[in-house]
Length: 193
Image (cartoon, rainbow, N blue to C red; front, side):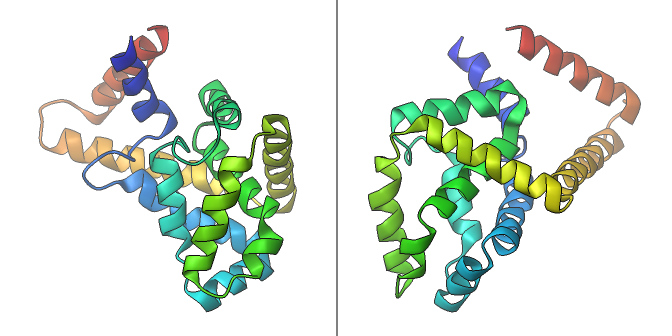
């Protein structure tokens, strides 16, 4: 049971995060930085001035699926959203919601240590899971109205997946279409478990 849940999480929710190249993580964390710049330009500018690497912050949150960041009630709601089909988009929207919720305090920080101190102090206190999910939904709605960032993320992920299929097929006797079909059947089997 637990192994198959982990396998499904790694292949469906955060694909290519826990691989040697970490290609999924390397694609999604710059997107987080871009989205923070679009939705919270003053915070993004402040982080740039302080040399706060949003990619590092995002990777800390995404790799552990917020397990070491949020209190249990909020954590389970983020996981529900991710497992119910939101996937990486849920993780990104949770990051945006968290940063938006603490934006005022974060903009008052004077250095990178202050940013991490505010987040370390505030994120464990985010007990109102419903408020977090509402904020996540508002961030997604805001982005879907303003630009095509979600489509960009989906397109990059699909292009990366097809490239990896082609590379895997290049070294084998299996055609890319057959490999894609096999992986699709594997995904279906993981969903049934």
